Length: 428
Image (cartoon, rainbow, N blue to C red; front, side, top):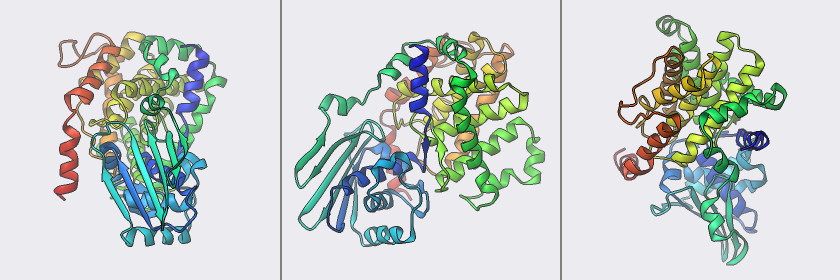
């Protein structure tokens, strides 16, 4: 990978997103189908893979007090604005929500789980009388692969690209070592990476949202209490924990503020960005050092996610994004290539195995835990303390540690999603 390719990947990977990515994905697919439906919507059928179902089931929708796939699909179908991408839910009006409510509460939305689909898959079928519109998204949250109206195919990607939705830039990244990625980052100037500071401002604004708005179940509010401040010391750990908790709780409760995403997900973006930016402020890091640390964090996050895959049975926001934050923090603290690798190894032996049971406000506690682990993993690493290679699934190199973590999620826990979905849907 060249520096120019690295910068291109960062520009396409670090983009604003509004709302939890899985319900947004459903809304986007429905919006695309809605563009070719001419009549009033009478019914919507949504088919999704288990991962989308799990992560969209309880996540908040910006500008809406309701949650879930039926609402996301109805809102998207009424919006008909797929050109807005991951920010299509901006500025929902009372009239639009009333139209969506009539569709949902009238029982006109059917949701089906396609268990055979292992990667991102959404199929939205909209009907009006004898008219039918179908859109399919596959492989990534914004990758439309099929659109039809009354059986006439208007757009269709070839089977290979539809199934893979691969990215040659990501492929090039995964052929590198973590040390090689760090070298590319350090060859970049402050000016070339300065756009990454937009993500800091955006995600800090999201973290501050709960200062003036009641959100979620009050997780951030507790951390702002004087007794919590006293118990947690009011130090960097507390600042990181509060920032990440507040931002995640706000986002997953339907906050109308956008998030700067990373590796295709907003929560992953805030988990990478906020621990690194808070650490940079705490140690007085230069702007150049800060943007380089952010770049390293985003790239390691994408590297990890490339092996883990989208919508893993494990919490990739912690396993991938917190691990990436640990690498970025170790870099900020002056860590060598070996010490940055040891920070990743320390995370490998700490957070691997945390399950993903869907997107919801409770994820704020998971990512706060991961962020705490990231700081301590990096701190130990730069002070010469690394877990032994004989410890569990830990390995000598950071690259193998990441691959071992991914193996647990991809192969070791391949049946876990089935049980998680059973518990989520049958045991409430």
